[in-house]
Image (cartoon, rainbow, N blue to C red):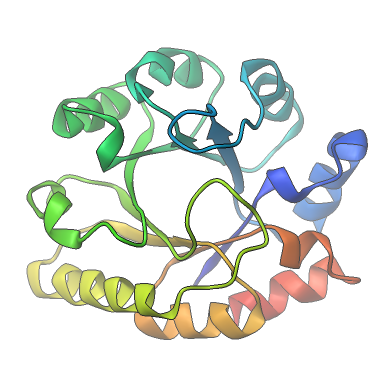
Length: 214
């Protein structure tokens, strides 16, 4: 079944603990945490103190998406906080295979994020070993953007490659995910759907999560 990952950057930070509990009660599977450094992407999000607070509060797995330069510097700290999944951008490191192994050896699932303009060929050599691939369907760094339709081609291609070769990676999609685009992503082969503004602004979180999984 498709899993739903609320993006906590879209939550109300004045009520973060309450909204974490409410979203878990609504049926969320995994929380998605966007870490931005103001260099790899223009914006800055939250740092380790907030991640630590979230890890103490949440009872479902945590998925960290590093939109940072030098992603290697954070791995041990995330592992110590009990993070379950970490993804980095292929453009952010000179040694993606080594970083993938380092994440996995730290007890976390390793993922690689692909920007809308980044071709699958850049990570094809990593597909036999990677745990998940994060397909960005908007340009990273800003919330509330419109879904880029052509990115669905990557989802379908990665699903086909997975089935043809018996690979075990999951396909995660992030950006402009609502009920309509969620359905299209599921049909293309996505396993994990990240949604921020749509979920947190929905009047009924449980219904929104349920529909996204259908």
